[in-house]
Image (cartoon, rainbow, N blue to C red; front, side):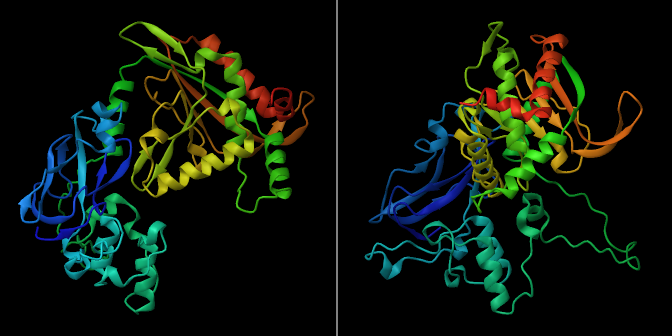
Length: 419
């Protein structure tokens, strides 16, 4: 309290189960009262803080005009309390008072997130002395760590603060020295679940009530490996990294055209199955902030190169915890690439109201036998399709998987359907 803020100055970050959004001040003045602490769960529309304009109270800052409150999914902001959201406040100790800068219209302090300010404070760094390399001069975590290295505060940048849980554990000392392992306290640590973690609790609880069945198959990826290698060798775009996933996503969309019921959503209250016209394929991503499932919109209309670029964009936003509600909402089917971490086999639960989800394992080279008994190497990938048995039957899913498998094993067939 007592700090001066300018209009449009960042006040806090609001984290919901769908996105992290920065809220800015609509007024210029002095903060007279902050009504919530970092990490609090606050109702949408509740007062956030009070600001004095010319020593007279202005209308209180609240969530009523925030992007979250306007979202059509605002009733699902926080998992267990539908009309709530999580508030993470900036560190007021690191906000520079405007003083003489008020008349000049300058913004107080450096642009940065609370996590970056906390990192700077931990290292005893005045964040206003750090040169920001982010958008509009925003100070990033890397800027603070590089500044610390230049000043001799630390030898090498650390990635410890990447994870939200790592931040919650900060300050707790755990000794791994076998000599004093019996002397250290064995205390429980309480980690409140926020944002994406709470979203997963709700979605998985609901999914567990749905009758699932799983269809498992192996797909020969020899041709896929050759195609990816060809893309890499003939890549005119140095900023584009070719992987297997965009090809799998495009071939999946091709198979969905033939089996539209797999790309549908089930409305339980109306007993209706909505066959989705767009193929908005969600990609499950494990981030330091929790599991998120952004989706690539209208895959049926995109080229493999366009899918590659959009996938890279979503992965970067997910890593930076900057996904918007638009990136998260509207998925029609989910693809979980557990093979990227190292798993061979997974048994996924539905991402409701979608009726199907696919887990793909890592591609492994294994020996295979021909009909006459000769051995040859094959790059195999395990596929596990989870389906809502209320609306999909095993025969439909099996035929769909066979179609997708045919396109993966013979990617030249994609050329027949590409527009």
